[in-house]
Length: 436
Ligand code: UGA
Image 1 (tube, protein in one colour):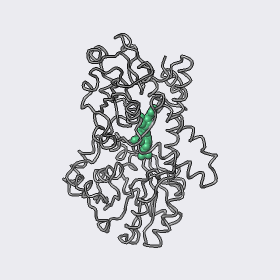
Image 2: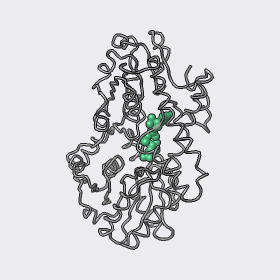
Image 3: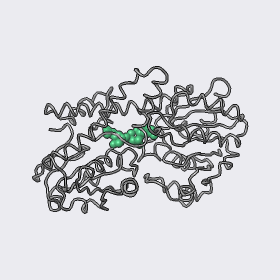
Image 4: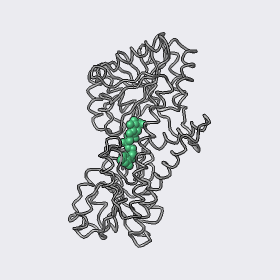
């Protein structure tokens, strides 16, 4: 099929290239000329494993191109909306400006029977509102098809999704929308990927509730880590033990400095804001606790560093290992790791931070921090080390080798990703979150 993808950020760029991989002919559209130029030359504007490869092969096939011209969406049978829905400035609600303007600018180029497919994460009720605008301005149909990809695994998650959700209108339009989406995702359908066909509101809610559930799971284990710290229990063993219960499951039970990124934090806030608008604020009020527990972990990690340095970090060298909100990503949006680095710098520490992928983005936002290109430079003469993103190269540090570089012998494991025994055996003071 001929497809257009509007918005070429983390979601849209991956979606555009992946749809070519699935056999379609795609035009990717974005208002940012620099991004479009990069994509057209086969370079991903952000770090995402596997994206450059599929981008280049898609461009070489002649079935993918990128443009800033929305008029080039004309002729595509389905148009994916993958623009951002960030947190509003000064409010917790989602900012829908980009979604609204994408729809407005697309309408003149829609033909009768075209399908507009919303992929952006939006507050429940948005699709119904947009469907009316689309119907008033064209003969196109709207479907809401939330995206569940994880950064770092975005290509795989898009090509082989673990489930498909279609929010479609009632009646014949809904049948037609489902048929078009089944054609687009024919490979996943043939592979018997679970499919839920539902109404708009359910599809929108599936997305935000999935992220709210994941955020809750992380904050739950971080709350247990706080209790473990107060009692001498070990949260890692606790997570293993409760995780063996198939109803609970071990994934997303890693305690540490908490969740960040462009999705979980802003999605739970937008969800509470929307619930309040609906007069149901109390239903999801617990998400405010989830948020608060999460943010507290950053305070705890900063405090652990301060304590390790005897109560005063001034002029002490702190090696901060990690800046990205998680490994296999250069994304620093709401990153707990970057936040810890910035706060320690603010307390007067001599922070030297490093990350395999996220230095360039971090430097743009926080030029006051000193960045080291590799962990050796960051570690030299450090008084304390704090690990805040669990990249493999930090996990693989050999305590005996690190001892030759640093001035101090304290390591704060803000991701509970290191082996305490091996560090202690090499003469280090090891501290994790909720680990004795
Ligand atoms: C998240 C969801 O996992 C995706 O399903 C969803 O599609 C995406 O948001 C989105 O809405 O677009 P992502 O933001 O890429 O994906 O990151 P996650 O893998 O969910 O990790 C989020 C944060 O939680 C990271 O900072 C990570 O370090 C942290 N985390 C994760 C923990 O602190 N503990 C864990 O056990 C797991």
